[in-house]
Structure formats: C-alpha cells, structure tokens
Image (cartoon, rainbow, N blue to C red; front, side, top):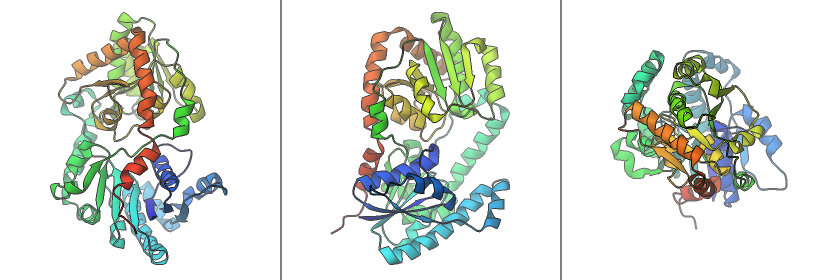
Length: 404
C-alpha cells in the first residue's frame, strides 16, 4: 500500500515528537508499505545520515516556510501560527505528490496533538488523524498544591480544550478523517460527540524491539528510585518528593535520582527542602541518552506521577529495561502501565494527601519486597513487547483501506 505521512517533527535519535514521526514511518516500511513522508527541511541532515542504502526506507519530501516566517516563532504564541502556515504549505506539496504517486491513504503523525488542524483530509483519500493527544486534564484537587502560574496555565488549558469543539479548522479535520486515533480515553472524550464513532484509542509512542532485547538484565536492588523528565509542575514530581519523607522512615537509605531540567526547578527544590529530603535527592541536569540505561539498571523503579501526560516515553524505556513503574491512573502512563508491571495509583477521585501516601506505600513495597519486585521486573519486559512501534503500526493498519 502506498502511504503518505505528514510529520512536521521527524528525526532519528531524538525523543518526543521527532521520535514519533521517525519511528512511525520506519515501522510502516517494515510492514511492507511504500511510505512517503513530508517533514521539515531542518530534519534533513539527521534523516539522510540515518538512512542505510541497503535497507528499505521511506521517501522523504522536505518543506519549510520562507526564512522570514521563522521570526514568527519568537513571538508569543507564534509557533502555533507558524505551524498552521506550515500545515497549509505541506498540504499543497502533498497534493502535488499525490497527483504523481496516487497514494492509497494519508496519515497525520506529528505534531501529535488534537488541538492543531491538518489539511491532509482535502486529498480526498482515506485520512487517519493521529494518534493525537492533549485532551488530558489535571484533576482539580491537585491544583492548590502547584504554583499560581501553574493554576492559571491549567485554567487556560481547560478553556482551550473546551473551545476545540467550536474551532472550525478542527471540526473540518475531524469531519474529513476516516479514523481519529486518540492516545488516551481522556482525549477521546474531548472529540465532539458526532465524530467519536471514528475514534480508536492507541498510544502515539512505542519502543523498538532491539531496545527491549538489550534491556533484559534486572536492575540492582539498592533502594534507589528514578525520575526522568522536565522539571515542570504538571509532571507530579512534587508528589514524589513529599512521599520520600515517608519512604525514608521505613527505608532510611532510600534515594531519589532526578534527571532533567525545567522552569520549576527552584520550586521543586523548595518542596524537597520543606519535606526534609534534600539530602536524599540527586539532581542531575543532563545525562547523554546512551548513559540513561545505567540509571535505569541502578533503580528499583521509575516513579513518574504525571498529572496530564499524553504519552511518557520514559515509561516505555523503563519497562524495556525490566524496571517497574509507579505512576498515576491519569493520561498515557496510566494506560501504558498495568498492575503486572508496575503500581498504578488511583488519583482521579483521591485527595492529594492520599495520593502522596499511596506513592510512598508503593515505593516502600518495591524497596523491601524482593519477590514482588521480581515479578514486576519479569512482566515489565513482556509489557514492553506489547508496545513496540511495529505493534502500534500493525494495529493502526487495521484502519487502512483494503486494496485490490
């Protein structure tokens, strides 16, 4: 089947959105499809250096706006207008390529957000929108414990989610789509009701089989916990820092390693000081990706209590290393992690205090119960194998039109 992908972000050896674009395209090629990808020109160098001449690969087409338009990105909110203009130009390029290649289907891959439109549905061939996320929301009971700027941001984010139903460009995108793939049930619930019969739920992220095979060694058993991610209020790290105070009462040598940077770093450090755990926390601003595996293997669990995350690639990386995950039953992590490979703390209706207590109990159990920890370690790798890029591409292929 001849497939056209729209992937604004698409680059190898990157995380987040570029990884989604690159790995989706590669997985579809491995399934035997003829894949063409429209992406930005600034991804060209990384893409072309990674393509091996002796292996099947997607055909890449590069498009960018004029150089003057780059100035838009420096304006407040300018990135969204730039992205919208790029989508219009990418559609025009897609129309030209489609006239030459006669594609069977087109898929919007990145950005993986349900808040920004795609015009690929105008090609008048089957159109898959997604997987896209962003419909997740922070439960109200957690908002009093975050900085005031965060409370304002969450209010505006909720307003934006509400207005999506009235956005003519998004309604056009939903109308034109044959399939709308949503990363979580929360995002699906944000899609206007009349289009929900087109929706399926599938993660936007995945893991490569080779990464799982390389992660078959069990981690060490020192009572060390790991958090990897941006230091932002909505990542929920402040809940872990408060939980550490209780954990250390039962496991005095417990430590928490934090890898990441972000605008809420100072606030999080103040939370650690107030909780009395600053001496038990290692703050690491940057670690090369090839060194991350060592940190996983030195940890009894990844603790990732994000309050509204559509994905959570570090969750998959941890599972691929045989490392259990502690998370909340919210967003992508809550869908990726099962009781067989981690501890999913109920948070939707729970108070912040009870969630902190539940996180502490889970961490203590993982640090002290070797049998429990070993069961989760064994099942973590099995769960990762269910969440490969190839498995995701194959599942979404069920939405592709039949060809003669």
